[in-house]
Length: 110
Ligand SMILES: [Zn+2]
Image (cartoon, rainbow, N blue to C red; front, side):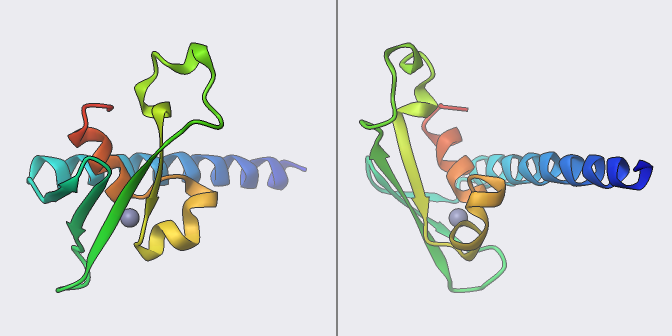
């Protein structure tokens, strides 16, 4: 029982840490000016791990899930997608990738 509790605690901490790391990496991408704006809803960010590879972050107006009281929270105004492997395979688990956070910083939503 004690082991189970400790394990769950470790997993939760790990998850929060992963989110925090993504946000910090996103901030760094923004600070370094590595975001190329294509238009208001499309951004290109060069991969830092795969040379010559770049990823596309897209914004979609969030018209389905938004509630009136959410309007003050601008980050809920959009749904985001990214073409990177991290987003494709892990977004359900840990949320947005660092590229999406970077775009949120760029847009002043973070
Ligand atoms: Zn990404």
